[in-house]
Image (cartoon, rainbow, N blue to C red):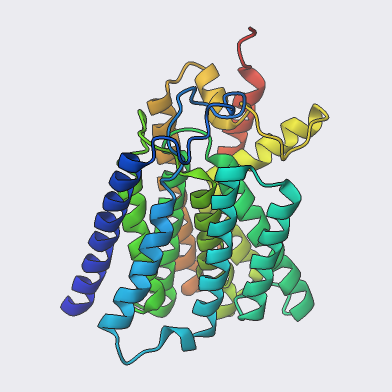
Length: 356
C-alpha cells in the first residue's frame, strides 16, 4: 500500500513539475508563437494577447508519464496494450490537429475529420462504449461521444480557469470510479490520470484569472480526447462491469460532465433559436452571461469550481451505489444536472450582453 501511494504521489508531483517547467519555458520563448487574441477578440473573452500554448504541457506530461511507467514497471511493455496504443495514436492526432489550429486556424471540416478518426482509432483498439451491446451501434455512439467531448471542452475554453477546473474534477471522478469498481490500484491508467491531474494543477497555476497563458486548441483537443477515453472506460462502462442497466452509466456520465454538458447544451439551444450555427464562436456562453449578471471573472471561475466539485462528488456517489446495487437514489443525484442546466440556461435568458 505504501509503495502504491508513493507511486501515485511521484507521478502526480512529477506531472506538476513537468507542466510548470514546460509552461515557464513556453512563456519565456513564445513572444509571438501561439498568440491568438490579436484577431480573436470577437470570440475570445479576454482582450489581451497571451500565448495559447499552455495545453502543450499536457501532451508532454503524457509522454513523460509513459516513459516513467516503462522505467518503473520495466517488465511491462505498454505498447503491447492495445488500448494504450489507441490512446497514444488518437491523442497524438488530437494534439497535432489542435497545434495546427492554433497556428493556422484549420478548417472545421478538417477538424471534424480528425475527431472522427480519433473515434475510429478508439473503436479499432477496443475502447468502446458498451450501451446497446451491439458492435455497430456501440461503435457509432463511441465515435459520436469522442467528437462531442472534444468540441464541448474546446467550446468551454472561453474564460480563465474554466476548462482546466472542469477537466480536473471529471478526471477525479474517473479515477475514484475505477478504484470503486476495480479496487485501489496503480496500473497504467491510474498513473496516467494522476500525471495529467498534476499537469492540470501546474497549468491552472498560470491560467486562473488573471491568467498568463491560454490552453489553446492543442490543449483542449488533446485533453478532450484524454477525458473521452477515461470516461468511456470508467464512467460509461460502469454498468457493463457491474451488470446493471446501461442507463445508470449514462446518468453517472452526464452528472460528472455537468459543467461542460450544461454549457454546451445551453449554447447550442440559444444559437439554434437565433438561427446561428452552434459551431461559430461568440461571447454567449454560460460563463459570459454570469459576467453579464454581475460576477467578475474570478467569481465565475469559483461558480464553476463549486459546480464541478459537487458533480464529482455526486457521480462518485452514484458509482458507489451502482457497485452495491443500491440504485434507488440514482434519480436524485441525476437531478443535479437538471438543476445546473436550469440555473445556467435561465441566466442566459435573464441577463443579456450589454448593448454597445
